[in-house]
Length: 393
Image (cartoon, rainbow, N blue to C red):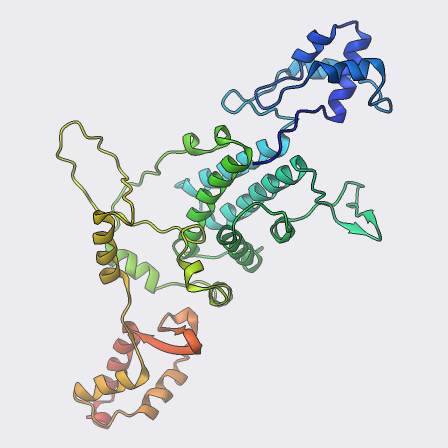
């Protein structure tokens, strides 16, 4: 967890000086700057009054003081976060909430694109808050001096630089998830992509859960988002045949598929399966008959439980796509009545159809750059043999 920051910021010191000028007592002043997320010792006010600290900070103007008092205390009731003092943390929570709200909106067309942009902002603010709380300088430097933006502000690290920092507090699987989303963001920037939601939804779900886990670990459980969001409802059930059709007839741009494939090829199998990198759940229709039991839409079971292990076996049987080597496909065609169909015929067919293009989803590269064909390619070869039965029969 980040260090507790029980000290006044520069703008607050200016307010304290203005209050002292107005004749307010130390205890009275202290009440304005103590909040649930931070306690200030009365000695800090005395130091300002005596001039032993913060001599260089000018007092706030009457207008600044009036603006401060008009909105005080400006603290979120649920978390105790101050909109100015805890600005980075407030913005981090808000950005992630907006990312999820936008993705869950039934009228949103660019769900994944908007989610990724807002989630990257949320994580950036969270890590900036953590680095600031731990007095880690997250500014860019050149020739020993902080780099500035066009209008003179300090240039701070983007999310990728935050992840590369040796003091980054998040685990490797969470970093991999964020780097994947950043890679996808680079590929879809300023472009329209279709049907990307199903393709990367497991990564987006993992990003949400990781953020909630991290913000609670770094800033305290009261800052979690658990109570802010509920289960997303839908108007219709999804039949497996409908979903398979949607996923088979993908029209994702080849560069997005390539980015996805290239990124995951560099990961270990353990990392790809880690729920912090990609969080997958499955739904089974269930009728609750026991009286007194909550009829919840979603029920979670532990993967190591008897019910979880049974479900895992079911999923493996249902979801694992059969894969074939070229020789197996040729043998199948010969066994089905096309003895003249040979390896070179198969090679010519997939070359003519550009069947190894990832966008066509006919197969996949496994370890050692070994290509395996899916069932849909076997069907395509069978159709080819049927159309040219005079050659191969």
